[in-house]
Amino acid sequence: MKIKEVNFSLSYVFILVLILSSFSIGQAKILFAYDEHSGQAIEPVMTAPQSEGARIVSKFEYEPIEFTPSKPERLVLDNGMVLYLLEDHELPLFKISANFRTGAVYEPEEKAGLANLVGSVMRRGGTKSRTPEQMNEELEFIAASVETGIGRESGSASLSTMKKDIDKGLEVFADVLMNPAFPEEMIRKEKDEILEGIRRENDTPRTIIFREFRKIMYKADHPYSRKTIGYKDTIENITRDDMIAFHKKYFCPNNVIMGISGDFDTQEILGKLKAVFADWKKAEINFPEVPAVEKTFKRSINYIYKDVNQASVVFGHIGIHRLNKDYFPIKIMNFILGGGSFTSRIPSKVRSDEGLAYSAYSGFHTPRDLGFFFASCQTKSESTVKAINFALDEVRKIREEYVDDDELELAKDTYINQFIFKFTSSASIVGQMVGIEYEGLPLDYLDTYVDNIKAVTKEDIARVAKEYLHPDDIKLLVIGDMEQFDKPLTEFGEVNTIELENEQE
Image (tube, rainbow, N blue to C red; front, top):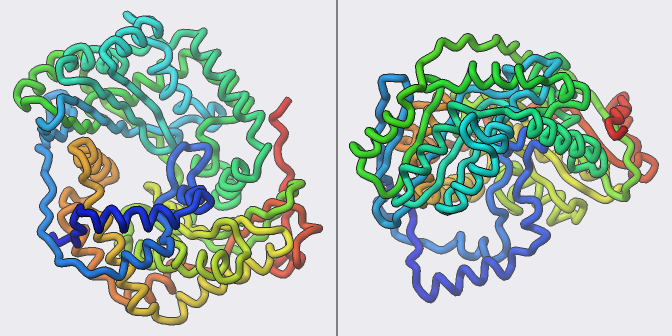
């Protein structure tokens, strides 16, 4: 595949300084929108916003070069464990990243927060043969790290160590995965930390908006509507036996994909893996049925009072899942609309041209089932309705008119030129493959990525904008003081006022 090249020379250093000098701290703050309660980024949201320096650089022309990323070797062990291995002898490092099919979507509603708690205490609570203090000392002595976590739709584990300490690192890593102790005192400590976080949730709009937006977007009985950290009452419902059972059910070798990279010999490391995981046996997993998301579009206007001098806004509707056939045209369309840079239409209009917003962007959240399209901004209270209307106008416009050639080329060039940064290290390469297989994407996804981006046309953009954007059927949520707004929210329809649950007591 061909990627445009910028030679690392003095001129490049000058260009880099130009970009950084015009990229303010204020801009950096809005690069990442994420779900506060799943710990997972909402993708795609925004790539790095284009400053004036970046816009200048984007006009430079370079000869394309051939770029062929390294390909990991895929193997499946007798116990069902899927491995992606990539040797890299540049530095004496060794890393493992692993994904388990698990998550908060599989926990009972009355025990919301169970998966998150298991993922945390697995590491923090030590193992049956190692206290937390002993494990920490062992890892600190060899400057290694072992981490675990469980989000909404996946669990993760990682190991990072030096080549000379692979044996010890693997020993601890395997022990954490197979034999977590879940001591009562650590469970209580973790619960208390979570409950303290819950008590502070309503302090700022930033921690409220996507939590409440999920509840508006999905039915109350759907796990997508719930917080992955749980709630005050559900946290207290969770027992040690619940955690042991959840771990036993989902943490088995035939339910994991591991990416292994670094300074090792493949045959040698296979022997070590088989040895440390020798007692880890296959298990039959009956995954609970997750109800399908209803694809319905019904306008609703929602308001939460907060005594602040600015408004936090999000609107959107049901969107797509990660395997949607139109993923690439939608990706390019969203870049142009509001997911790409300050030159994208929504931030350009709302933030740059009108000066109404501190941040403005759009995105598609793409989980296993139907996610959602959203656009969001923060604005002065006195310009709330005006900012919403400008953003909605841009959504309507991209449905009704072909995008400009320059916009299309900028979006495609940006994704193509960013593609190389998916391969900055052997760890990132195997991590990509672990994620691709976990999501059920074609294993040649990276081989065809650039061609899929290049193939997107203006006609594709127009088609997917009409099919997947529904500006007249949005669900709108505004947090702020309505008395300070420029116009009443009733301009958009009947307003539903949401009273925040008080979990601070």
